[in-house]
Length: 253
Image (cartoon, rainbow, N blue to C red; front, side, top):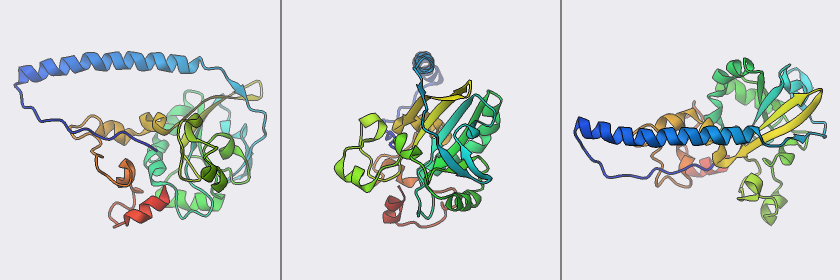
C-alpha cells in the first residue's frame, strides 16, 4: 500500500496573532479541499454500474456463502481485499494496520444499509487463526477456491508478475507480491448484484484512521528515509515490542 512521505519544513516561531492569521489562511484551503472532496464523492456515486454475472462462492465460518449472502439483508456491500495468501503465516501488516479500525465501523455501516466483509485467498482455517490472534470480530471469508481476487485485480500468479502483463490499480503500476490491497463496493437490486466501485493503492489512504490523525501533527507521518518502503515501520499491533529483521518485514508485504 503506497503512501506519501513527510516533507520536513523549517521551524518558525510566531506570535499568537501571526499563528491565528496563518491558521485562517490554511482553513480557507482546507474548506476548499473539503468541497472538492464532496464533489469527487458525488461523481463517484454517479459512476456507471457493471452487473456481476459470475457466481462466486466463498468459505465462511458457517460454511459456504455466496456473494449475495455477504450482503446480510442490506442493499450495499463493502469488501476489503485483505492481503493474506494461502500458506502465509500471517496477514499483511499494512492491511492489519487498516483492519484495526474495522470493528468500530461495521455496526455503524449497518445503520446505513451497508454490510462489510474482508475477503482473502488464504484458507478459512488460516484466516480464523489470525483473526483470533488479532482479536478482530468483523466478517472475513476465504476466496481460496474462486477467481474473485484475480477478477478484482488483487491477486496475481507468479507468471503474471514475471511477465508484467497484469498491472495493479487499473494498469497504472506493477505490484511485486502475489496479493495486493484494495476495496470494492457492490449493490444488490431485484436479486441482481452490481459492482459500483473499487479503489486501490493511495485510494485506500483515507481509510487509515491512524494516518489521518498523524497528518494533523507537526511531524506528520514522519516516514522520510524509512527503508525499504515508507510503511516499513508498521507492525501487527501485537508485535511492536518485538525486534523484527527488516528482511522479515519485506517478506510479509
